[in-house]
Length: 118
Image 1 (cartoon, one colour):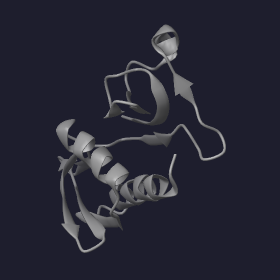
Image 2: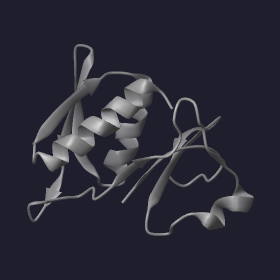
Image 3: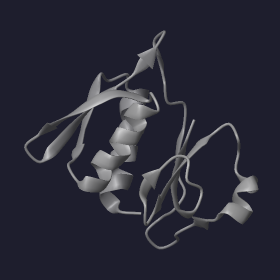
Image 4: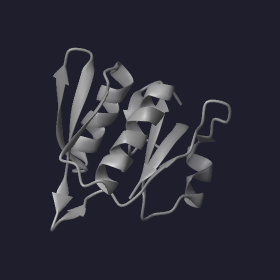
């Protein structure tokens, strides 16, 4: 997993803990693809591209963060992969974000496991 993605996920976690309305992260194709997926899944209000940064609009419901947990699964020196035959080991209460030749997905269970979200 790329360092810019790890930094963005950490900033999102820290932003929710601090009850921030928005946070900033580095602009990259991977980060934008992840943010599009988080937006479509209802975890963020959206994002704005400003110069070379992304302003990520965090989402709350009844003063509670919509995201309860983000866990990095693959790390730069220790990548984790999944295929259709071993996806029954996954926790059904979490959404898993994967990366494969088709792109970033939360429903295509094969490829590199990037992180889980709850």
